[in-house]
Amino acid sequence: MKNPAPRETILSLFSQTPDGFVSGERISTNLGISRAAVWKHIRNLRQAGYLIEAIPSRGYQLLKSPDVLMPESIQTGLDSRLVGSRVRCFDETDSTNMQACRMGDEGGVDGLVVIADRQTSGKGRMGRQWESPGGVNLYASILLRPPVLPFEAPKLTFLSAVAVCRAIMHCTGLQPTVKWPNDILLHGAKVAGLLNEMSSETDQVHYVVLGIGVNLNMRQEQFPDDLRYPATSLFMVSGQIVSRLDFTRTLLQEIDALYQTYLEQGSAPIMSAWEELCDLTGNTVQVDCNERQISGTMIGLAEDGALLVKTATGKVEIIYAGDVRPLSFEKDEA
Image 1 (tube, rainbow, N blue to C red):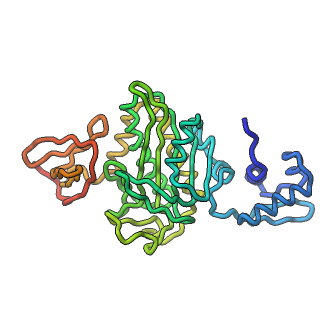
Image 2 (cartoon, rainbow, N blue to C red):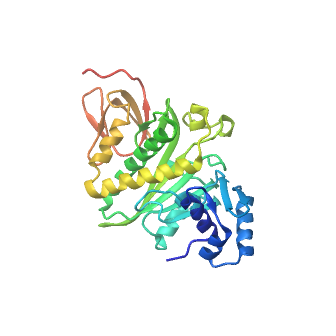
Image 3 (cartoon, rainbow, N blue to C red):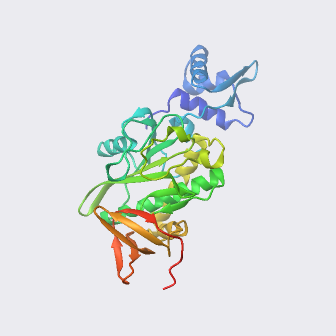
């Protein structure tokens, strides 16, 4: 197993001490380096935004960490069994999903997390671009190797959605809702999107990549003018800056817990949790399916995750791909 980087080791030592003080001698011993080399690593951490004070006879004390997403920061204090066991962070990349798929093809481990500060080619559904400015949001992809048949794997999208909603509720107290198949909404505006990709054969899943983009601290002026649907951020709704580091740790822990449920109990509890977060059931919706539009009452999900819509004629349409738009919130009493 690869030894942790010096920066990761030092940050881990800070997290292990009740009073926050770590002696230079302890760092030197753990890393097997000289005291002069310790000082260089402390200096590099300060340059990266960590506020570290040196107290004679007591050692170094970490007073404040920057809101920068780095493997050692994310993994320090992360309480998960699988997800986040390996973390890769990029200042900039084309797409975290692209990176995770490349790593999946190259033998990346189950539970690997790929994060970018900014993306140049963020991927949304149906080939759309996901706007990905740096320093404000979370762009993450999780590589999983579930022991399931390929037809079961798409249900992991519902797992991602529930995890994002729970992380939002935990970190902000806000109450998000879900919109089939992969949108997270606050007050009707999109705050997060999901894009899952899979590599498989007829009877075997090689890997699944859970792509997640959450608008955390984005401002109105950072959104493009030609958005297809209204969008928002946690900051715009709450008026409070959200710690990207805290949110990332919380999200990974929620995904890890739900994934263990998925492996042990199947998809039923995940689907049920998703339906509890959906406020469109029983309401009139329109679904754009390429060149076809279907209108009717949303009545829930099929066992395989397809959307069920009852039209005015009484026919139940089974929809596997499309964009859902609410037409009213008046319950269908028929």
